[in-house]
Image (cartoon, rainbow over all chains, first blue to last red):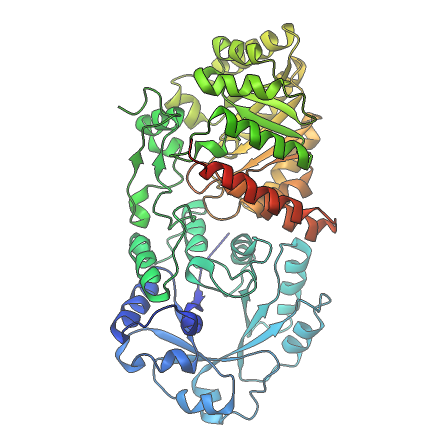
Length: 294
Length: 257
C-alpha cells in the first residue's frame, strides 16, 4: 500500500533549453503552479537560479552542485536540499552546508546491475547523506526492487529516491511501483521531458496514485491544464493534445458506445472526472457517433 | 485500426484503410482488427475489401453482442469475429441495465451463432480490470466451452499497473487454457509497461495501435511496446521497420479524403 508520495521536479534544470525569452514573473508563476499541483521539491541549477529571485518564491528547492562555485549559491534559506551528482565529491563541501541542508547523493546504476555501487553507498555512507537517488533504471523488475530494499535495510536512516529514465516508456509505471515498494521520493519532470527519452511525467504519477490507489496526495491537480499552458509558454514546446492527464483533448469523445455509457454514468468510460485535472468533457459528432451525439 | 480510429475526429476512408492494412500485413502483424461492420456504409465496405485482399494477417471485425451486428461481420467474410463482452458490474448494470446471467447467456448465444456459421469466434472482456476475477474466469471458461478461440482482457480505462497486470494475466492464463490477448490503455501513461508485464505474465498477444492512437490518451503504442519488449526479453525486434511503417501510416491518416 502506498503511504506517501513525495516528488522532486527537475524541469527547471532544462530552462536553458527553452525556445524563447521569458520574464522572471512567468518563471515564478510556473514554479508556484508546479509546487501547487505536483512538485514537493523543485530541483534547480545555478543557471535557473540566475533567472529569478529565489528569495521571493515560497517553495522548497534542491540545488544541483556541479562544481565548487555552485556552493556559493547554496546558502539561500529555501534551498533545503543539495544534490551531489554521480562522480562528484561532497566531502569537500563546507561542514555548515552539510549539516544545514539535506544531501541527495546520486548513483547511476544502469551499468551496474549487481548494485555494487548502491551497496557501497548504503553500507559505507557519509553521516551527511540523507537520500540516495537512483538513476539509470528504465524497466521494472520486481527482483531488482526487492534487492534494493533489502540493501536499504542495512541503513534505515537513508532514504531512497528513484529517478527513472523513460527510454522504454516505463518511467511512470516504474515510479508507481517504487511508491508501492516504499521509496521515499520520485524525481521526474512535469510532462516527462528531458534528455535520452526523458523522465517520469510526475503529473501521471500523481494521478495514478490518487485515482488507482485513492490516496489523497495533497496536490491540487485541478490546475494541471493551466500548468500545461504555462509550460508551453515558458519552454516554447507544445504539449500533445492526447498526453495522459494533461492533453487538452483527452476528454473528447466521439464513439457512440462511449458517449452512451458516459451519459448514463461517466465512470463507465472516464477514469476520473475531467474537472479533477482542470479539463472539460466534450462530445464530438462524427463517423463513430451515429445517433449518440445530437 | 478499429480502436485507433476511435480517436475523436479520425475517420478513415475505404482507400486509407486498405493502404494501412497492406502496410500492417507487410510488417507481419498477426491480426488486424479492421473495423466495426455493423456501422454499415464505408466502414462495412472497407472491412469487406480488406478481407478480400488475401493477406497473411488475420482479419477480425469488432461486434457488440448482437446477432444483427455479427451478421454484418459474416457478410464481410472476415477470418475472426470478435464480440465485446462488458464484464465489470459497472458496465453491466449502468451501461446495459442488465445483470451477470444476462451477459453470460448472450455471450454464449453469440459464440454459438458464430461457430454454427463456421466462423472463428474471439471474446473480449471489456473493462475487465474492474471486473470480479472469479466472474471473468467463469465467463472465459463458458466462452471456451462454446468454442471461442481467443480471450481478450481489456484494461479499458488504463487503471492497471505492471505488478497487477503480470499477476492477473498469469492467474487467468493458468485457469483458462486459451490463447490470451492483452488490451491496454494509456490513461496514466502505463500502457507499454502494463503490456510488457502482461507478456511476462503469459499473454500470447498484445493489442497495440500505431501512434498510440485511440480513445482519450490512446492505446498501447506499438513502437513503445516493441522497444521495451526487445530490451526486456533480449529480442532483436525489427523496430526500425515499424518506425518507418508508423510514419507511412500517420501520413495516410493526414491525407485529405
